[in-house]
Image (cartoon, rainbow, N blue to C red; front, side, top):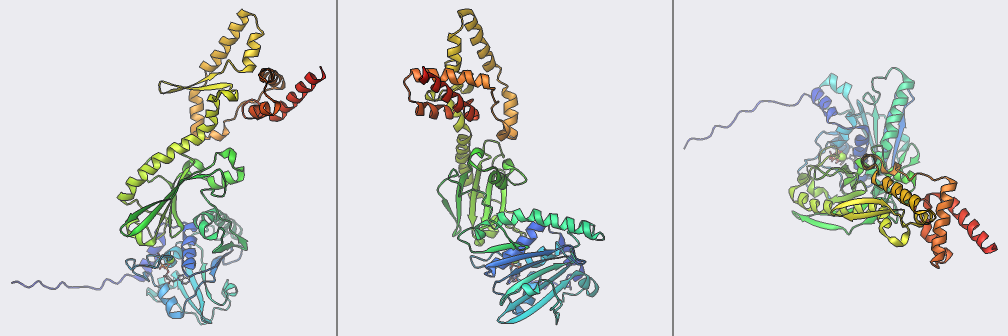
Length: 497
Ligand SMILES: Nc1ncnc2c1ncn2[C@@H]1O[C@H](COP(=O)(O)OP(=O)(O)OP(=O)(O)O)[C@@H](O)[C@H]1O
Ligand SMILES: [Mg+2]
């Protein structure tokens, strides 16, 4: 038998200067880069993480200081090595890392000089990757400085912990490095924009019961819970568990409260700069850290009707390969088995979300509630018709001679038939919360309140019941102060008589 010839090998050691520059461009943003550094601190068991930025000095810097386990010098040198761990090795459950790259790739995406100072068992070690130094030496040799006493952020280190310091922030300045004031302005704005991302990505670590505090320039970051779970009007479904290759995927759907059941600040906070429409969808967490959000993974469109739906998916780090988690921890793909299950979830929650929007409309079909409009479902079509039996209409119609009465009822029917359905539809698809009922003037309100009151009092209803009934429907609901005043005046004058 012919023996296979051993293949030859040639030296293909990467050029340090070229490869390390290449590591800069794998697509981090400032917020995903800082998140990657925070991941490491959390994995190291930190209870407090402080982000300190100094932008108005000659050499601006960003520092992340934690009180985690820290590293010895050997561990630090290993940590500075690109590819410090094999991505195929299993990791402990709370470990947020995978690739042995994040510390380096996240840092180089924002700066040309990375200093890590770490303190463990009373000993402080430091190591520096300076890309300008690597460019000259073209070697994979990390600097080990003897004296780092003057280094920014160093005084913030406690008995144990790690400081990650970014200097030479060339990427953050947007080419404004020569103008110190403009440069500070740009960096500060970018940092402020990153704040919301951090509040969202790490909300489960920083909400009560508190496991972790994250401070940005001395200010504690408040958790941003995208499901508004503390709002009693949030509807949540029971958690579903899906087993996959010995690991568990946990799925829980939430329907956010209607915007009227939330303060405007909270509503806008959880909508974010992209708005609610773009923020609906799956929220994928890996080890409770948010990886991505605001997507239905191509399973359905982000529509107005499902815009209150958000689905939490929890996965452990043992499923990283199945979900194709990337180095930046900001993208993933659905494993096929999960895809099928999520299709059902989407169908169910979309129906739930639709209900939340229609709830206010459904009151209209409840005859006990005095609707001005009726919502009628017939032949699979929905019609909205003015309710001519409403006391405000019928009392006036009854006061007219037959000819005029017919004319009046025809006018009302015309209003109903010419409801601007297309315009409403277009507005609903944009910002439905901006659509509000038109306000009525005093005289119109006066007539409507008096007619309604007279019919209801004639039906022997007590005044509290009448008030409760009227408070719930427009136009009285939207002009409730005026309505109450007219009711009080009408009842007062009746009693005097
Ligand atoms: N703040 C820290 N405290 C203690 N050890 C740290 C800290 N930051 C990094 N390390 C050590 O450095 C190693 C390398 O970190 P790096 O972020 O490059 O990779 P990783 O976290 O293992 O994986 P990934 O590339 O997925 O982030 C970590 O595995 C950890 O052992
Ligand atoms: Mg990491």
